[in-house]
Image (cartoon, rainbow, N blue to C red; front, side, top):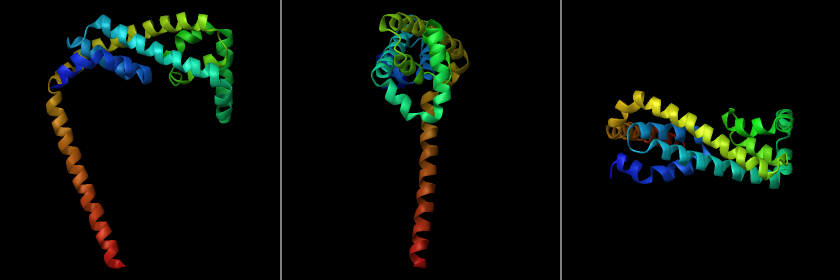
Length: 189
């Protein structure tokens, strides 16, 4: 089974799972796959929005349940946490929607929002809206970027073979070096 068949068969599930954890890269790759015709653009947007929304919802619930103890564990970042808490309290709607776009807040943002005790009835619709906007933006960027990486992707199997050979050669050289050093140290003893 080649890489294109794998993407066509498991691509949407991989997008959902991947966007729950690390979203931007997975979403960009989903856009590239849509550009290549392997996946459908609207379904890519829907998949990554769903995964991003589920991931942030889980982090929010963790923040609601364990927020106090989590904040205690990160005492050295207390200034940043306090600043984020002030932003959440002052502009909760903008913070919920925007936290997924802020570098460094992709994971900690929903936890802090949950710890701030923002009600779920406010968080959930804003989380859905933010996930859809985020998914549309990054999928579109990936789709447009597909024009650049498209020619490279057609030869992906060949590139993978080259990388495997390169890694194999590096591993053999490293093992030989390790063996010679180990042998030399035994001779000195």
